[in-house]
Length: 160
Image (cartoon, rainbow, N blue to C red; front, side):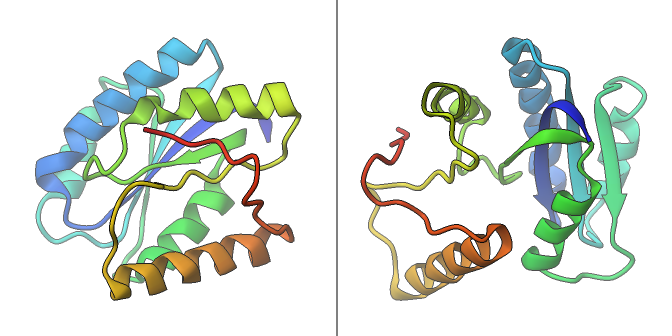
């Protein structure tokens, strides 16, 4: 892996969102001043997401696309992001604009300032359904298991 940043975007049937997400990722990547790539995992979308990505690829040289031949789900998309990244840092963000791409800046700052190995963003002021809480808890366990770390509660970097 090389120094720099991968902005990873898992996508499944995101035709209406993917172009804006990729363009926002590129703008954000350029503003970091780091060598960066945009890695999109198309999880066998059936709505034309892949066509939009193919159209963007010649225009956005930082864009790389990984396609799953069949829909494997979000965990497999995350796995593909982790295994196909070519940079030391990976910032994952959803194609549907749940988070702004520039949320990467406080995370990069925390990495540098506190000499951290991992920063996981989370919302602190949003009310979640029981289903979403279960999914979020599962993702936290997945992340802790994958990286062999325990997520800290105190000293978290809180994003707006």
